[in-house]
Image (cartoon, rainbow, N blue to C red; front, side, top):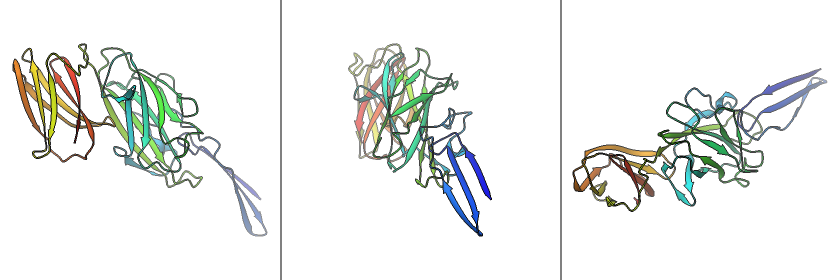
Length: 288
């Protein structure tokens, strides 16, 4: 007697498993065909609003991917947290644990969950699928720690007036058992703000400086404002995750000094402070 079982899935690394069992003198002989589609998922598995994630096909569990999924948007070799509309950027994604077998899917959406800009894949490293919304995926040659410690693709930022863009990422840390069981799915979100019409000015006429005070666990911001303006501050790690966000109130005309007490102790590393004064956004790097 032969029993043929087809198990078809559409996401992650395992997509097809054929198990043929022969009954011969009361004993079973089982043959497994290796997965034939390791080149990424069908669209809509990032965990974004209204979407599924890789657990639709993999029987593993969903984890918080804030520390596992290290996503950066690069202008050349410089990480950014504010994008210029229409500009091209390089997106890199790395799984911190760098498992032996792995996969991912990512998209970038506006506040109304529409596609934000466009994606272009990198041959052999990432492929792009989807129609109205675009999705970056691993390929059949970039799903191991040796072939692709980092995934890379190009993002063309959306038009002016789009506002914040959120990258939604689902990564798959597999146990490499050739099955859909026992995997771990990591979901994360990474927010990037639109630069104001005035642009991001690293060296501004309204001189801006920021520093970190280790003794008081606070950020000190110094700036000169040419008008009374609403001000706010965000602290963003290099993966694009906002770790602190606060409203500073209305600035005074002339020199302003603000000491912002952080509500938690942050991990050591490089962070980007974005200070919004009126309609202008300023970006500064600090080391904690």
